[in-house]
Amino acid sequence: MARPPPVPAPPVPPRYVVPPLTADAVLNPAWHYHFLGIGGVGMSALAEVLHRRGHRISGSDAQPSELLRHLARLGIPVRVGHDPAALEGVDAVVYTPAVAPGHPIWAAVAQRGLPRIHRAELLGALTRRARTAAVCGTHGKTTSSAALTLALVAAGWEPTALVGGQVPELGGRNNRCGDGPWLVAEADESDASFIALSPEAILLTNIEPEHLDHHGSVERMRQAFAAFLARLPAGGLLVHCADDPAAREVGRGYAGRRLCYGAGAGADVRVQVQRMAPGAMEIRIAGSGAPVALTTRLGGRHNALNLAGVFALAEGLGVPRPPLVRALEAFGGVARRQQYLGAAHGLRIFDDYAHHPTEIRATLAMFLELYGEPLTVVFQPHLYSRTATFAEAFAEALRPATRVYVAEVYGAREAPVPGVSGRMIVERLAGHPAARFLPDWHELPARVRSGEVPPGILLTLGAGDITALGPLLLGGGPP
Image 1 (cartoon, one colour):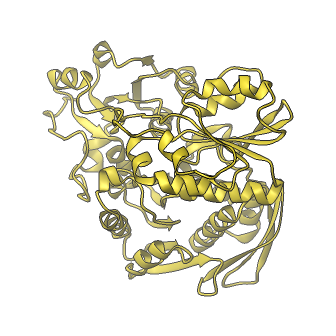
Image 2 (image 1 turned 90 degrees about the vertical axis):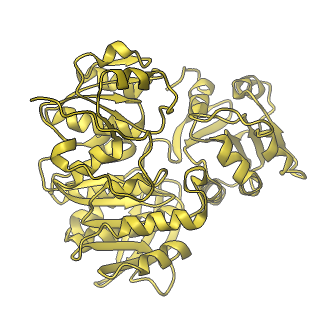
């Protein structure tokens, strides 16, 4: 099939504007798609689903990773480094903002006249060909989308799913390719590209200031969520959290079928934590029918809310209660969400993806409630823009820990910013008895061996390469 003329597109789609491409124009069975940044969690999930559906996929990424190796084992040609030679025979390039607009690969893409398709446009094409349940919100998306997927699986609905983390119950994958009519999609608000999706149902967990480097203001961010909710059809279903002020307010703007959930009296679906113990949290969910009591392997009141939202949405879609409760009780969580790695040097070592003050506050509260002190936290800030915006809030979120180490900022897609450093957070922790700036977290194993860290819980936090610290402490290498 002849390739259409190049489609001029900026590296990031215009804010809050639905891309004009139709599903057939974006999702072409005759095309060979090359993914730039295929090792990212969202890109790898999309690439694998398309590969399993028979599309020709290849990709490249800046760094080697287990996700990259997994795709290679599936038979997808991948390479480390964005080499223009990988574009030979390609019909379209799929990208995210992770590959900077000034990267030399874009000149090679332009020279070949290749269409550029944002990941969200490709995912949007899939959502227009399926009954889509989308999970959005500043926090809790990955845990909630994974739990929802397992609920639909338990009901025999054979969903396809794209999740922002690796799920043990999905064989350690971040996706599932089913032959049923439903698709579960984690909807990304970071660059407002989720408005390219066409959902039939939405679960909105919360809305807090985040990704302001893109949105510019909290109000613009709320407008982006409102624009996404407006994508629901007249007969759609919105489930939103009543405990979160912004999610409650934005959700009320939807005129269709709507349910709210939370711990407060005003929720349609209410959740109460009856008892919390490591590996066994007892919760009670009360909705339109008889109350349901279940024991989840997850911990933390934030996860009780996440499960209540999934319960409300799944039941609203028609999932029967017995398989729904079974799935929620069996769900053990997602990798890098309060994940236990092992024990060494008198420490029980956990790893968590938390990289926003609210996430850190909720995670520390859970660990202190379940295990008590001493709790040692090693935090690696993610992005210079986020560190500059939330330095004070990070410090207050970390303050309850017994001992705090703050590493240097993991810049990811951002260049260093003069004056912005992990040191800013430690300076704002003035008065804390054991808060240290540790620019290179690789120094910590030696400090642990020296006895500097008291026996108890050690928790690594952040969205960067800090996840490799736990395996190093346990005597292995990076995961």
